[in-house]
Image (cartoon, rainbow, N blue to C red; front, side, top):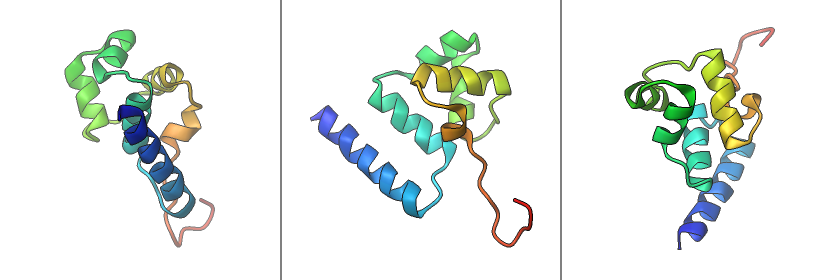
Length: 94
């Protein structure tokens, strides 16, 4: 049942990525579920508090470059896949 839910979330994410912007936080949460990791695991690996990790995943804090690399590495995905900036409409050069 869990694998089915994960596969459904991944299919939904794929569809959203093709058509809409998906926040890095949503991508991280989906990847955490997919790999059956907890934010506690990543926080410990990073050497940061669970509170800080929670605030990063909640969008209250921006992850530092080292934290971004570690999170992406633990999830086995490129940093750019998780932390790509959203392009603003109507701006030239972005």
